[in-house]
Amino acid sequence: MSHTEQGPEEIPLMINALKGLYKNKLRPFELKYRFDKFSSPCLTDAYFDAKPFVLLIGQYSVGKTTFIRYLLERDFPGVRIGPEPTTDRFMVLMSGPIDRTIPGNALCADGNKPFTALTKFGMGFMNKFECAECQSPILEKISMIDTPGILSGEKQRIGRQYSFPDMCEWFAELSDRILLLFDAHKLDISDEFKDTIQRIRSQDDKVRIVLNKADIPTQLLLRVYGALMWSLGKVFNTPEVLRVYVGSFWDQPLKNKENQKLMDMEEKDLLADLRSLPRNVAVRKINEIIKRARRAQVHCYIISHLREQFGMFGKQSKQQELLKHMPREFTKVMQKHQVAKTDFPNVNAFRNTLQHFQIAKFPKMPKNLQLGLDHLLSTDMPKLMEMVPAEIGGPSDSNELNKPANPFDITEYTAHKTPWAIDGPTKKSFDVEFNKLPQTGGKVLGQDMKKELMNTGLSPEFLHQIWELGDIDQDGKLDSDEYAVCMFLVDLVQNKVIEDLPAQLPKRLIPPSKRYLFEMS
Image (tube, rainbow, N blue to C red; front, side):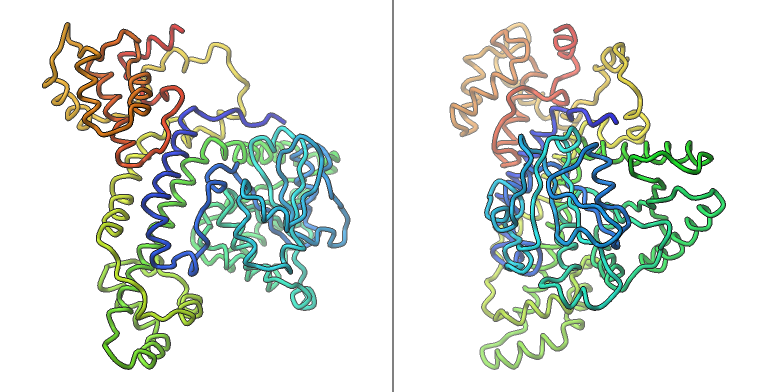
């Protein structure tokens, strides 16, 4: 099995930019209105730096652990496979230099991993949580999360010291892909499995279905596939058709050879989908931050509206009245701010959390924070998306990933066609500024440009890096394109879109007029 290649050089720059935007514009907003108590906790650096996660959920004996072993092409620490429920804990599989397991308490205490927020679920969960590290090519690109098999009986649910749907919902938010596994020999969906699926409905763009153990005669396979789609339609209650991958994911040969071609094609599509995750991780994280920012904005609308209902006296009785009629208050906010109903939180969960706070004591929202959030959604995020390379997430990804590398790939000779990150209107505004500066032979000399850059207020260290990146042909002078690159980087730093500059200029920021220098090198 061929694994994912390293993503474009733009991805680390985009992740760092996104991290800076969250820290400077969204996180202060969340803390001010205690959004972290109503939703997931504030994000840490480990969240942004983590590899993509693939979450596997399914009833017992659907082959989740065998599926992971098939992808890893090896056993992993703590693996147990059998017809009975063998996985009794949430297990994260990550890349590591040696084979070892890390207990849940130690894992949640490690600030370099994105699991510190799990401490809020208590010892009952952390005792059933662990990490397995081992060497595997696929784990160098993605990490996996195996979950306990879901049983249909009530005893298992009562015996747990944590809520299984709650945990799956938390891991679903963290994950880049969610695989729901079904056994072709038993398609029933238990109440707990149905509840779990309902809890991850907000993440349905990440969900893929795997019909495992599908090595059955073709006619029977058609009936099983149809029955599965009917069952899923009732649970997801959506007109969109979910993507279902059909296969028998283990290391034994197929018994029904007539399905060999179908199984090979389905496996190829599934692996291509997983391979695309590292290259699309920056886009997905941008999407997640946008969703989080919009939820935080709606949260602010609700709290501000409720706070306005209080007068000088009778605060306790007013709070009880508002809590009792929360659906009515949601409707008022919806009408006042023209917000879609689907953007609101679950009213019961919101009310249960809000009752622990005194609504009247929530602070007024400072105008600068509100403007910062509006600017984040209207300007910063679109600008960050302009840095997304055109080839990431393109429609031909899944097909191209399965082709062997061509040493004479035509893209090497057409790099000049890659769109420039600095769009036309932005370039024109930079040209106006450039034409006001003294020029020699159509270029601005270093000493003249120094004065211009010093006026930006950035530190000499930043300006030194910006000059190194912007003076692309290293002649100590800037033409209009190089000037645009320098000022574009200045804007990114000044607006806190990025905190650190890249070591080398990303391809998307190289002016088309200068790309020949890189194609020749």
